[in-house]
Image (cartoon, rainbow, N blue to C red):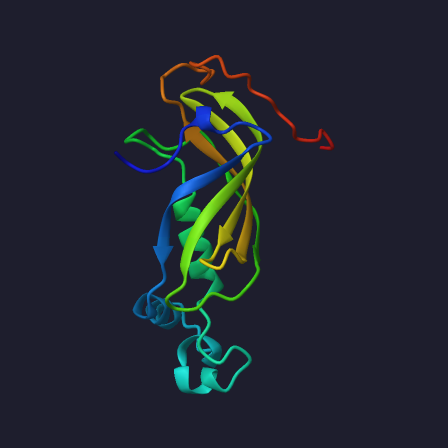
Length: 168
């Protein structure tokens, strides 16, 4: 079974601990620094980074965010892409990540709105290291498929609650 979660799992006001974790390897970190033309010694020069603030190379924030977003992704279970555009509202880096660190993700669900085939979910994803340090915080709206093909995504009688302030 593909990892991930369904629209019905996104209950406003609750947290969702995503089950997978991922260890960042030295090679993938250095590779991303090279292909993204990030020439900073703090990321790719172990000798120079050893005398820096962290005493060793720091993993690129882009890799940290990408891994955490992937860990927290809803299942697509082979279904077509979302019917519309979602996106990240903000990505904030917290504590540094180093090669060998293991990341996991927890989502705080703010709102869920049904749509055809699933629904839209507003959430904050926290990426945590093995030391439980918050390494990245991501605010996003994403589409999650429903377990069933019902347009409301409330097969189990779940009440859909929108807690988003109506300031817009």
